Image (cartoon, rainbow, N blue to C red; front, side, top):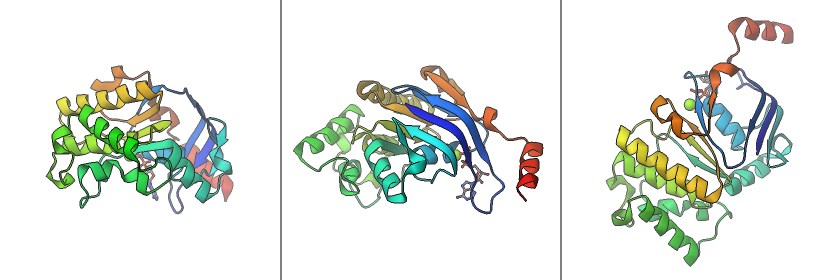
Length: 231
Ligand code: ADP
Ligand code: MG
């Protein structure tokens, strides 16, 4: 379970404030995250993933309070518990498809590079319709294929949490559906908690829940009076 309490975050030298007083996300639930551009959706994903330090408040992931962790402990938490999928894939161009999927073995100890893991990487790619591309350079793949590689990589360590930031943003509707099906079926199989940012409202019915950032937007008056009070 992810529990966010009285979370306040702002970037240095920025007027943006994220304030979430209370948000609980059940284990193994799949949530869509929607809201206007610039409202803090990516910021929230990065806070819960342990990429950004918690400013004020608490973010508990299965009893671990991220606000009490050091930078090194947060990094460890992220590598062990979180799979991340970005809109622009973030694949390593000079590696093959399979080596991209196996990347978590090289950058952390969440999953060992043994025969079982290699087999799992192959299975994920086969289930994603990429059986014919396993040894190819990723640069030879289409956008939808690249995004499926990124999802396989995120799923390889069987993460407790899967975060996807507009993963279907660059894809046509048919490919979007395939990507979502791949994420949701794997998540249900492994009881993974999923948070996926999307602007595609036609996908929302497939989620257990929609978290709309409209509710977290600080009105300009509130923001300026809060700033005034702190001076
Ligand atoms: P969303 O994903 O909902 O579009 P973001 O979380 O990316 O929103 O950004 C929220 C606000 O924080 C925006 O105003 C953005 O410009 C600002 N922001 C994002 N990243 C940084 C950063 N590293 N430093 C300063 N401001 C940032
Ligand atoms: Mg964003």
